[in-house]
Image 1 (cartoon, rainbow, N blue to C red):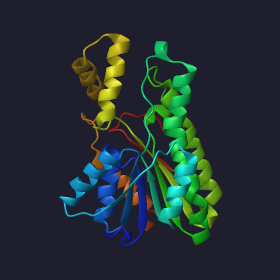
Image 2: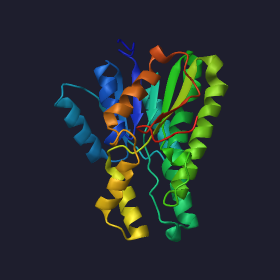
Image 3: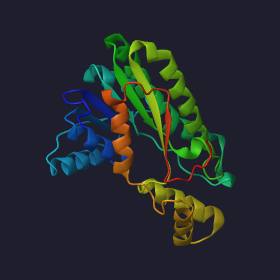
Length: 257
């Protein structure tokens, strides 16, 4: 299926690894002009080399998305954007006994404001040009309370509400905003969460991982490329009547309707 993304400018934040890198790769395969953003130039260079080895070309830009002014300046240099997929920022999982006002603020800065800064940098220009799509990849911690992820979960919940709010506000001006809620996806974030769980429970990492997989009806964690496939479809004109949606991707864990 042609997703009609060839030649369109697409920005992916958090694109140096994990789901973000998978999204950059999938967009490049569709012929989009991909700009990959991360705050770490070395990781970006590695990502660029990895995709070049697969015959794919992306541009890379390093910026700290918690800095609103720097984010706005970078997007001003990039120019008109048709697609924005936000994957940047990850609030650290923290045992509840280690929570403080500082860690709660850090969680919002890392996850909520990184997405909001990039969204604010493009959404009005998308409305002016009469088209655009934003896909926010937001962990399921915003739906389901987890004592190891209170700060990050609160940031994720705020992101989902803001995303749907933007979707409603800009739907009549040609801009679509959607959310993907991945469950356990096989990235470095899984190890970080397991380390926090080990500190909180004292149980072995292998035992905790086996328990996590056991609770997934499909019997496995998701792959970044699987999330990317859905993100790229949602960002494309093929999903032209989809906005304000929150798509669950957790292998069947969520049983509520």
